[in-house]
Structures are given as C-alpha cells and as structure tokens.
Amino acid sequence: MKIYIVEDDPLISFTIETALKKHGYGICGTADNFEEAFSEINQKNPDLVLVDIQLDGKKDGVHLAEKLDSLEIPYLYLTSQTDPHTIKRVKETRPLGYIVKPFTENGLRSNIEIAWNNYKNDEEYLSFSANSELYKIRQSQILYLKAFDNYCYVITSEREYLVPKTLKFLASQLNSEKFTKTHRSYFVNLLKIESLKTDSLLINNVEIPVSNSKKNQLRQLLQQS
Image (cartoon, rainbow, N blue to C red; front, side, top):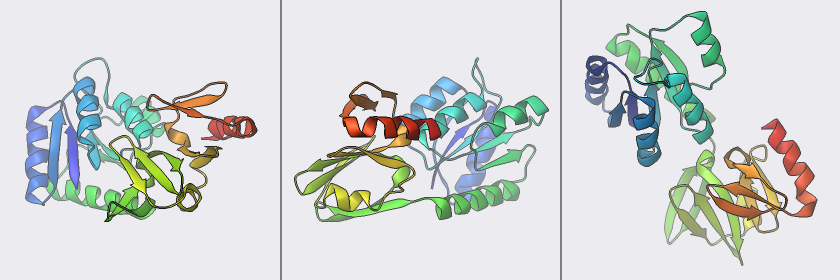
C-alpha cells in the first residue's frame, strides 16, 4: 500500500513515516500544506492519505479532504482537534476514520489496517484483458467508457485501455448507481462529471456527447449524486 502523509509538524511526520515503513507500508510522499499535498497526490496517486487538519497556509486538512472526496481517494484524519466546529466540518466529508493525537505506533497501525480492510471490502472493481494482459482496476478510477466498433476504451485519468469487449458487455459490470449511459457510444462515471452543457458534458476536460433522450434523466441523476 502506498501512503501519503499530510502533517504540519515535521517531527510527527517523520515519526509516522518511520513507524509505517517498519510495518511494511510504502510512503510515496509528505507535505505540510494544502497546495503541495494536492499537487503531489494528483501526480503520485496514493492508495491512502493521512490528513492532519491543522496545516500551514490558509487551507486546512478539511479543505484537502473535500478534494480527496471528489477524486475518490481514501483518507484518514490524523489530528488533535476535536472541537464541535471541526467535528461538524469533518462530518460533511467522507473519511475512512479519525485518529486522535497523541497516538501509539500500534494504535496507528491498527486503525490503518481496519480502515483499509473495510474500504477494500466495500470497493468495486472492473476486470478485463487488454494487450494480452489481465487488469483489475477500481471502478472509482474510471472516468468513462467509449465504444469503438466491437471494442471499448476504458478511460481513467492515468491511461486508456482498449478492451476487446463491447461497451454493453463492460457497462453491465459497472455499478448502475454510479455510471450511466449518455450516448450510444458512452458510459460515464457520474461522480467525475465537471459540467453539463446543452448537448454534452465535460469530464477531465474532454467533451462527451449527450443524447436528447438522456438529458432529463442525466440531470436528475446528477442532482441525486
């Protein structure tokens, strides 16, 4: 598992990194502020992020958590702040857990293992073969599917896979509450839609057509998601 640590105290950050490495976890980066953390997390795509609420700069860990929610990157809060206002803000985000400082090494490891195990059991995957290799990717990573004759492109923010299966076949394996057909050639992840226009929508700066028959349904789904 690749873990990214967001912590404004360098000593605590070093202690966490040392403890986790001792237990076999990989640390793919650390940061003490929102801007650096968000930029590196986008580049390094960690499996899990540990987020301190108090950070250097104007934006704190809850602001970062909101961004992680939109990217569907799992995270745990790691903080000493337990006041009602902070808890109220935290409740509006979707963390895997909330580890209160001070913590022990065993407590940190146990919280991470339990949260990660629960997350993995809840996560949904899409399995397919492409270029003679077998892939299993999280459905939350998928931006959209695009038909190409009897093949189908599976598009994520990191890469494209050309799969020798039809759009209909692959789409049938997706969570129907999170994905919908917008056009005869496209299935999209509702949580990845950036904007909806008259005849199209935008995902990751790519314009995707929306059929007339799908417009009203899509607007209703977006309001619910």
